[in-house]
View (cartoon, rainbow, N blue to C red):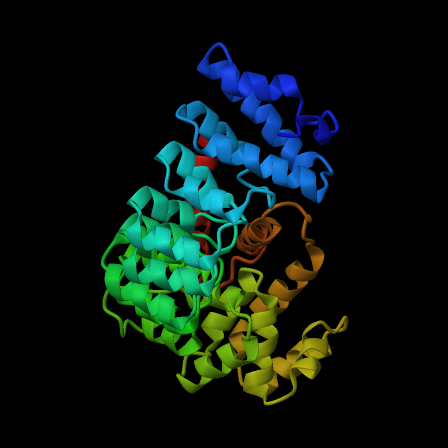
Length: 381
């Protein structure tokens, strides 16, 4: 074998230690060094052929440590030939796992074979890959063990199409490990969010509501108790929705866009919701409502408020809330939205005690809930 042609990257001594090292550890160290050279050296076609011959020797070595050195060192390398990656993926778990979970040399067909013939651990290795195509995900959803499906669902690099979502929920919709993974996913289709509502606990519904925007009609139904097991705070949903116009219109159609919910939105800092709500009730464009709400003078807010048909007894509360909002700023740090909301509620409570009793109770309950959420973190610190 033309070792000398490897430009001193793969030295004769390294190969000698690989083949005839005094112990398994020395041979594994030599294997690691050779693999690093193969991965990093600018080798010619002839040198690559020699390197591949060396990798084949390592992949067939009787010593686990040598094969593991090959698998771990070249798990992310495009220079690991596919047939060697396939061989390693069928080795013992400690050797197969790094290759299955990382190697770019394995194709979708290779990964599907692992899913269909592998143990739960190997299925998990597939599900953990940085990217998993829809083709592979569908097989995981259909044939994977519970832990592998949950791992894939939680992996935002795994592409779920409608069929994969439906299959996973159909098989494991009654398993908290999988439904929790759905809740933790960054983005969920609306129809999956709706299905989860009927499958998960009240506590899990709370987490789902916080993490994912619910369809407006579903949010209204939950708030009205149409789903017996769940309740929802529409003000919090207003702060999360991406399509504020549609959300507000849905509330209006369902008779839920009253002065109380708008005032609560204002007192918790959800100013976009207030703007869109006033625009909807006043039947004017949002841009015009925005100008009137944030008018530096005293007439704009009163004009849009009266046109919206809101009660005069609450106008001073709205005026105070808008003024407090304009006096405050986001701090720009992590979770500044949460801190702004908390400070907004505190300012409203301390500066405007003339709020209706039910609104004061609502704000106090919200503050208590936020304090409860922060306490564990503070204790951990």
